Each structure stands twice: as structure tokens, then as C-alpha cells.
Image 1: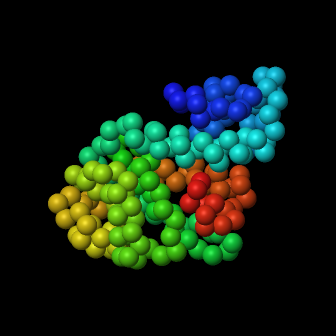
Image 2: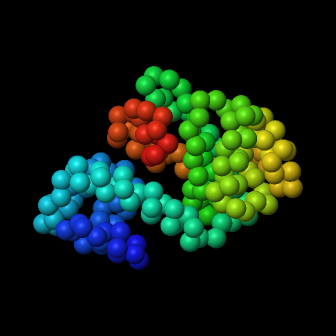
Length: 190
């Protein structure tokens, strides 16, 4: 983070705060795990402070990372189910050709309307249309693509979408570490 004015009022240096937020979002560590890692380096920070830093700065860091990189021409889309309070939800995920996550969306359905909502969110957030979209054979992708991105090539070849399928693994690890998501908002924020 280049702008140190957002850290004004904290007794810890910007490097420690940004490193803590990076640790939490990059690895499947809990707040208490990060607290122990810092304690091993003689930095005393409570897990609650770490939680507040992650809540405050996590989205800021994410937006800066998204805005500074140039997206590729190929987007990989996939959905996976997650349980929130014993109800089934779908976590829609978009990854571009280098394996970096573009966006996610938690929804109750996986029909055409849900796919349209996800595509609109992607297009609005990126401001660029992809040349090629790779998905599984879910019919709602084809229907939404036909209406919103008719010029993009659409591939549903088996095993082409494995990169996006594998990108769900860190989410599953984090979900287990957190002992399941407690609410729709928590899952979307994560």
C-alpha cells in the first residue's frame, strides 16, 4: 500500500498492518494463527485487532490489485455449492487465464437469471469484454452469454475448466477453518 495516510492513528507501522492483511487473505490462517506468528517475532497484536484490520483494509487491497493488473482475454467461469446455515448456496467464480480471481458472487440459484446477474457484475467491474469464455456445460452460462456477450467465443470442452475448478480448493480450506460460513454476507465478503 503506497498511501500511508490510510494508516493514520494506528500505533503499528503500515508494513505490519499490510503484512497481516496479506497473510490472512493469502493463506488459510486464522486470526489467532497470525497473532501467534507475530508474537514469535515479538509483535504483540490481539486477534481482534487483526480481524478489524482485515475487515477495514481487505477490500481496499483487493480493489487495488484488481485495478492495477491487465486482464487476459480468456475468462474461466465456474460455480460450486456452499452451505450457509444448512441452506444450499452457489458461489460463482470467475478466473482469468493466469489463474487470478476476477470476481465471486454468492447466490441461491444457478439458473439463467443468476448467470445473467453474475455476468453483469463481471462486465461492470472489469469494463472489458473477454474474447473467450470457458465454462462447464451448465446451460445457464450459454443463455446468459448469448444475451450479454454474443461476440465472445464459448468453450465447454471437458477438462478445459480445471484451472477454475482447482481455484475452489482454497475456499474450501478457509471454509473448513472457519467452521462453515454463518451468513450470506460473510460468505460474499470472504
